[in-house]
Length: 277
Length: 233
Image 1 (tube, rainbow over the protein chains, first blue to last red):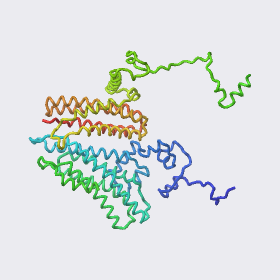
Image 2: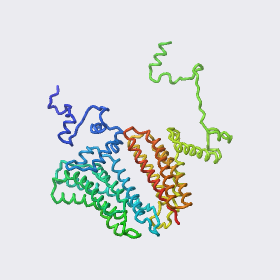
Image 3: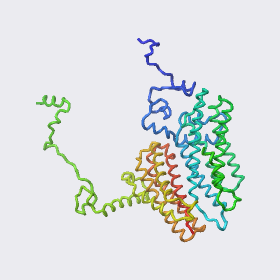
Image 4: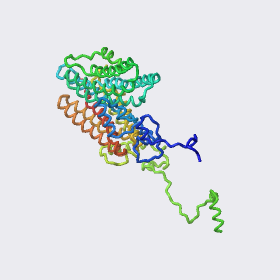
């Protein structure tokens, strides 16, 4: 009775898979609520119960988290972390626990390395230096939350001026930054050994890996922009990463040749201030 | 007579106005409030614990706490720890641990051990965050039950702290460090094992590791605080 031109005729949407192949941002509706579908597709279909809402924040299992960590440690040109691993499904578990682990890893490794450096000196008294945990926590969590906030705001502003096909949500940016810090955990543990050349080697390797994950993730989001903006954004991302790594190394790990004195707190504050933005 | 009864039954809420318990429908049950033997011994009103001596109240709570300590020391999958959760035990253990961690490296203007407040913050905020984490991952355990379990499982580490302080009185060389390391490692393993015996059961299978890791980190940090305690000399 109703013709196909009737605007009130209920329209069937295309299959979700076909639309998503063409354009990742397409709105898709799947009518059946098949509980055998994996969690992610149920979210995309819009069938969310209370339990699913919780799952958005922690909607992953062991293999997904492991895959994401491995993906953040082994960047590959052309593989965008957000598109490949997050697939519109960012989680808060990975970033939060990686940051927490990194905070305690830095504090504990710094303490152990200080102890090893000053071992055998007659008037050295071991202190647990527990206050450094607070400082490490402030630095790492500011980097992992305020820098993504600034980046997201900036990208939003640029998106208003230049239409971009690729845009990232705030959660996805936080997720990328969180996972990109995961390479620093083994690096920080390696810094316990009091060899300067080893520390610089590991810091360079970690910076390359972590920086390239970030650069390759944000390249598609800015590549249609003005060249100056592209250079500005990319160098800001890299420079902040470098500042965090070098600042942590300088402040928490004392050089082996120095005598027993307090790490110069003034220089450390100047080094660390830009990284907390 | 029968049709009249049927009409009655067909009307909504029919028959409720003249409900009466007839003799041939036996009503049985027990409406007594369960109270412990102490209240009855006091000879007071059996249904209210308000009039019992304070000693009895305190002892009852202490007995509950002690029973849970025993459950932690021999972690079987019993539900007693979960059913009657209480937070007295965790508070007691946290205060004891924080007090035992004081008095070390007493240059105390900087770079010392954890302050009393820092221990408190780490234990309680750590427990809260782990509880939120396991709830967001779909756990079936309730908030306070999880806090209760995590708090009670600090017992082995508090005992290790007491042992460490005793060992440090004897000496603080390499041997004492080795002994302390062994004790702290054993109690850290014990704590983690005891708490995951309760917590991991409430998770779906593919997320057990995601819940166990933060617990591992939590007790590792507390174990680190215990191990690195160095007394002032």
